[in-house]
Image 1 (cartoon, rainbow, N blue to C red):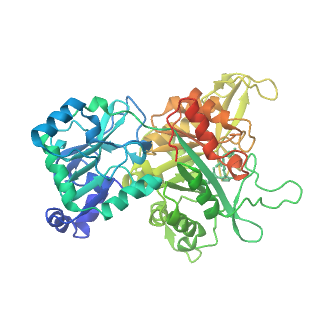
Image 2 (image 1 turned 90 degrees about the vertical axis):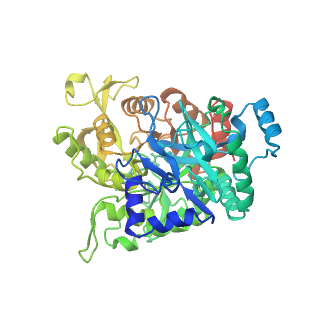
Length: 518
Ligand code: 1PR
């Protein structure tokens, strides 16, 4: 996990680079995942001038973000080479070589796997053809999603985060007989002229994300809670709502088919040193049994332990990544970073947590959590420095316009920054995804704020997760249809078992969306 440059740097620093090259050519089994696959190539556009292991004579390039959202983040197919050759070519190949054509036991073309990357090796790259094991289409581009030759197998996707289908890939590798792979490779190299990449279908799917707001309750237990409009205390007795234990609930959502799970730590744990923050334990325990991506938000910023030890935001996320978080989500600190960016005339300074984390771990690991609320105005002139939209849902005094104010500290403090300014700045600083909440809609079950979501979606190229307000299955169809977001998140309806994740997915499937079913 990580960006190409720092990954290669670590291999050199730890003296693995040369030993790894010797190992790779020794014939002993090797499996690489994500940047572990990319490092086998000569170089990557992600780190100009940095050399890869150079086992495969091809280059890793950036996806074309003019035609689609980048990073490529989510579930997609991995179509084995045998599936994108026309049948008479296959027959010819078989007849001329007398080789048994069989699908490998590694991948299953009917399953989807989890990808998260901005760089890839295009299937048409010279030099990679001999190595292609499977390809994946992302809109207009077909890239290599796994390679296999001799003792070497590697995937661009994350099998360890791809649910049961991914675990099968890992198991197949661990129990495989290297000779079987070799045979397949000999066959592959005899048919290298006949691939037709246009036959690779686009199976990129919409994601359903389950979100768990976690905090300590009045008894000091760590619980999943949920409020409306960010108030998590029960009316009347004022107790923090307790909807279950974080790891148990997350496990339930994994089993029900959630494509991703987000934990938002909404207690600051200011009195604890970094290493003792309970969310680290939650992540470690969750990842033992949950094999989809985990995002951790809340408290991603510079911090100081009670004994005065300072930790940069980069160190803080390092702890979370080592505890098995796949992405981190930044709320308040992203607002401050965006304010700094605009004060600096829209220039990057490399000083913000977003820049530092995305440089080290890759932008795909950095999510921005946005907590906006509507500010109604009678006309755009009332808010000349803000991005104002005309709304179909007028304000309390029949105002027909509004802008979305960014907040910090869990919605407790409003800032003079609008959501448009926030997301544009954060994308420029290197964020890889936006988790778009809406305080007015949170916990209301009245549907997503489609006006907000559409406006944000149009303003940036990185993926957007719609959040806040889901109340029934129709709301998911609506948000995907009307805004084109890549993912939709819900909390309350799942926690209260009002709607199941599989019901949402069945409905989306019926409505014609590509979706991962388990
Ligand atoms: O500022 O970087 O420490 O991050 C704090 C994080 O904690 C932010 O991501 C912020 O959204 C979150 N947060 C802080 N206070 C609350 C609160 O509720 N009092 N939760 C809070 C935000 C909103 C969503 C919710 C959706 C869907 N929760 O995550 O899950 O609105 O809800 P619904 O489907 O029930 O409508 P920092």
